[in-house]
Length: 407
Ligand SMILES: Cc1cc2nc3c(=O)[nH]c(=O)nc-3n(C[C@H](O)[C@H](O)[C@H](O)COP(=O)(O)OP(=O)(O)OC[C@H]3O[C@@H](n4cnc5c(N)ncnc54)[C@H](O)[C@@H]3O)c2cc1C
Image (cartoon, rainbow, N blue to C red; front, side, top):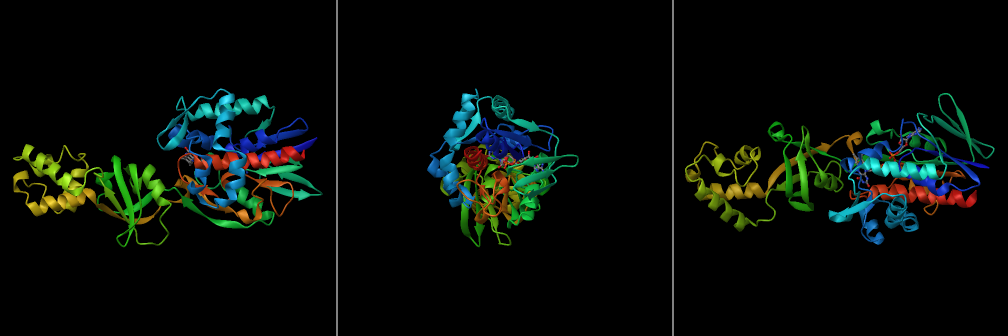
């Protein structure tokens, strides 16, 4: 009987195990954590954005790096396939804005429980609390070494993840294994990552969460990309869904302005009329009170400083020019990009094992027979919206299916 060892019980490793299993092989998942799917647990803010419900062909425009490499595996195991598998084992799901799919319960733990059910049903063995330190191949057999044990395998899948959020177990071990086997690594960088900014207002703004705003990134007045939605100010700069999305469009060492339109639904004139109405209502109040219907409290002093308006002025003392400047600032609150947060804070690792040395149909190494890669360890990364998990399932499935056919 062939021994198949999958290193890593993340979504890629789980799918590899599930699709590899047949009656003639022995599939073992080895996971260094005390439980499976530790990163999966924190996905989608604990709700797990399982995949995306859009047409499968739309996925490729959402994959930022090596999307062509993903053709075969995504079509071989689609977003609808993973949903069918999970529903067959009782997971109910719902589709939200942007076609993002979540468990109906809003609990990522239910997704993990469902995977566990499938793994148990298929009688796949899981060894927890076991970290593989070294792999070698001798006479067609792989030897996998942990601190106290040696495991033998005919087939190995490396599904150890990237280097983001290392506390979940993804500490780059797979890169080390791959390198020892002669694989090339593409330098890792953070992707979908919060941004540090230069600002005098970091303290004042920390914790301010904005909804329905439009953020643009600009290079020398040229808009590179705009996104509408939610963001938050943090102790270092900015984060939240639209910031993470935009982070992907920023090239290192570029002069970037982050421009927030606080009222994207109001054009310049409509906004001015709105300000005039509020000014009539609060005519005898301080200007900071005059803006309380339009802006959240913590933003008012910042907007006034940026617009160079004395906050002790009365509404009825504000000049037409000052009002115009106010509208201008509300629609263009601008911060200078300083840097990306470190890779450990990134949602996904860009870079990893070069796709040039992996067969895109099977995920098998082109260098070492019977060695496979799956998931984030490979140099593929996608946008937010459930696409990264789909990359993990599809590559995991491709590897497992090939092993299944050969054992
Ligand atoms: C905060 C956050 C939120 C996210 N939300 C979403 C989302 O909602 N939707 C989405 O599509 N994507 C999301 N992602 C991305 C997604 O989680 C990853 O793309 C996905 O988990 C990658 O799967 P993987 O199986 O390749 O790696 P991982 O999930 O990282 O799993 C790798 C496993 O390998 C184990 N391992 C590593 N080295 C060893 C070793 N030497 N021995 C034994 N075991 C080892 C690790 O402990 C780990 O369990 C999110 C990421 C983060 C950080």
